[in-house]
Structures are given as C-alpha cells and as structure tokens.
Length: 61
Image (cartoon, rainbow, N blue to C red):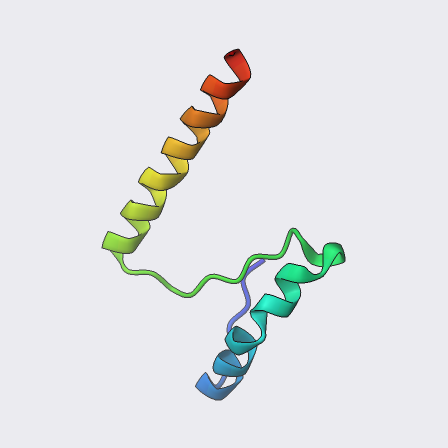
C-alpha cells in the first residue's frame, strides 16, 4: 500500500518516529521508504539482488 501525505510536516513527523514502528513486533511488515531517484532505485535493486544470491548460496551449503 502506498500512502501520500498532504503536508511535508506530516511526513517529517512520521519519518522522525519510524524507528518506533521498527521496534514494534506487530508491525514488522511495515516499511517506510521515501521517494527515490533513478540512481537510488538502481542501487537498491542491485543490493537486493546481491542479498538474494547470498541467501541462496547459504541455503545450498
């Protein structure tokens, strides 16, 4: 689900408190990501694929 905030102030308040969500076991599946430019998206894509490959290799051994 994607949520858009009307004001930058609301976004800043949420981002300032996002660590509380990360510590809450009931909300472990919630991720807060800011909008990324194309370069940042590509870097994240590469990192995720490397992590998946590493995980596959660990399962095989």
